[in-house]
Length: 166
Image (cartoon, rainbow, N blue to C red; front, side, top):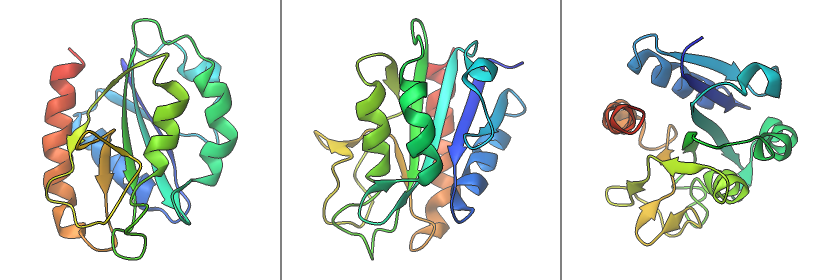
């Protein structure tokens, strides 16, 4: 078992794809789990968690996370760090871009150390509750409109996380 667990929920496949890309960027030092199929017992001993979700509707959390997040949030996060990424559509849902990561953030912010925030510079959107003081609470990814920026954003984010996870 590695020290890093990547947990994702994906409805259309994009969040799963991004989770696999993140895993690849960690060069084999991260295990990956679909929240639809994982138990808390399987993941409780990890030190670092990377949470990935798609955003559905107007800022809604992905369905599989709806069922898993309440129990995940009750885990003991003593000494653990959590990073979050969320997929969103900055054109069709410009006023609620990638807000699902804020739902995850709110559920665990008082229990876990959240890392991996990124500036909201370079994104095309109108509003997002996932932005606090000019920083997204995690990494937003737009595979619908800004797919050409995904790889670079992931590489920079994972390099930042590698420093946080040492």
